[in-house]
Image (cartoon, rainbow, N blue to C red; front, side, top):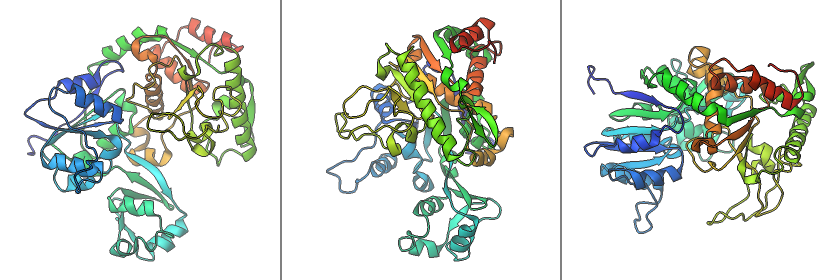
Length: 464
């Protein structure tokens, strides 16, 4: 790619239900080579089925001794210059493939933004200095903060895995581990992946709230934000807002706990870190949320089929120790469901196997139609970007925390039957998240009638 013709990086930003994936499939050209990246395997199947040009999905080929993993097969497809589709998870591990030049001829299409960074490796500053740096196992590039695994670590990785983090070693070896000081590190998507290929196109909604958009900008890739104009989003919210019944959860508004000596509504402390909450306060929050969910089940959700209810909360709050029941090839449960603190006593998730329950989904659920039957969603977050990652991409100058929160919330709500133009109820107990959503839905001018309806249902005064 010449200096006069820089490699195009484009964000196609369209509302949910505007057929972004359908458009992506329809626009494929026979004369070009494509690597398509989607959140889920089910979407891979759809693209293979519906694409107008041949697209192949990597799989383990039993009669091919050189293909023992899906990545092996993907490499073979790329070497043969075939169009291929894979998942976000697989794409994240293709830095070596990009380094070999196998993506150079490809146009890379990403359906929904990928995760660009997480702060998953931590140790104390003393441990980092004494065990990693002073021993010569790692060094840090002073200009970029990148952590480099030295030959000493490479030669002894297995022997020292009980002392030094194997996860950190793998991240450093793939060029994705960066030190941000005080023993804290973030694992970043390999830059080579975002620079690979003839072009990069990302299909999403409300890109301004995504860390990926901010990261592309940070890398100097100058992404073009194609939103088709503000009138598209205005038309979208005007079409759907009368279909969404936004609710509070009254019990969480009435009860308060003390955080750092000050009373805080339970509905307002969902984002607080463990360091800010005493163990007793955390237990109170867990118990009261379960009670509040039970009161919803006894009242307005009494006649709603449990599988039609989505609960958005941390995995370890819904499943005991964060462990989902095991499932067989046909999807039936092979081990019993054991409730975490939010589910225990909620009346939404009975113990055992083979029973109907409300569905718990991650707060970053996107790009799936698996829940489009759901009529109710309960959103138990006060969403913020991870502070270290937020600082890494440029802080508030790069991405507003409110934009981030709203984008995450919209993605989850649009997993429900609102995708098909059917009405839903969204329980959003946290005031900040509820106000962000209402303000977006009503273009900054929430009718007093809407506020009155929410307030009267909760037994409190109208307004915020």
